Image (tube, rainbow, N blue to C red):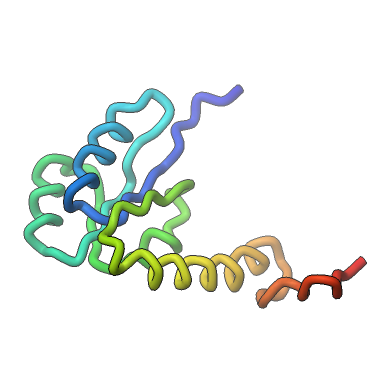
Length: 114
């Protein structure tokens, strides 16, 4: 077993975000690497409370950061669909490349590769 902490990125620092950041920051096996929010005031508040944590207004920064092992969505329902679709697309395109394979959509159902 390893003692390595899981790097966490939090998207959304509004209602639940501060609680999630606090909990992941105080966790034994987790630490917060980055916080994403569209409100510069919320990012400034999070930076003041957690000076070692990076902040951004672009959630793609969290998805491409190699220090982040898990991303937590704590955003308004209005933004969740678009972010989820964007994340799925980004993972489909980048994960295979990280393993030396060509990115793209998985095979269609019923048309699986051997």
